[in-house]
Image 1: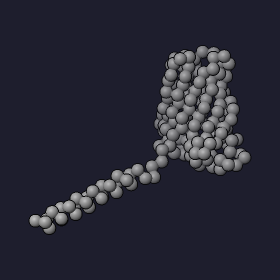
Image 2: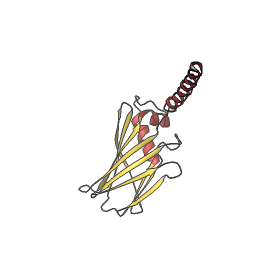
Image 3: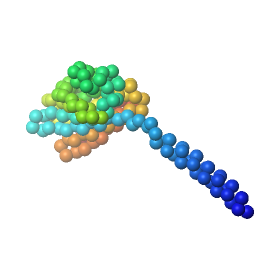
Image 4: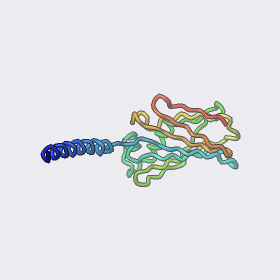
Length: 164
């Protein structure tokens, strides 16, 4: 009887060990690919200001340049200009890169578009890091005259539009 109990306990410990192993390994080496952009409308200057937060290693891999080199900001500017488009009331807007900042694992990118007096529709094409990382998700949060909207971009859904 004691032998049977010991055999059952040994099997239970063995099964528990295997389950624990699988649970723990499921959390290992999971990389999350995302960017977050905050859009603020500045009424006084009729400007949309964009602040984008990206993972330093991910953008560095995408543009193939070390973030500690002098040419990094110029490459980020070129990359953003090629992967982010803004349309206000169906009219394309030019974005102006205003800077970037590397802060450890995060790169902050700043850009804006001016001459925006009223917004009835805002359409954005955001392909940042989508070609480099298939599971990339880009979120854009928009604040316009007291209203908040959120857009979600991923492969197959690179363009999004909201109405105010």
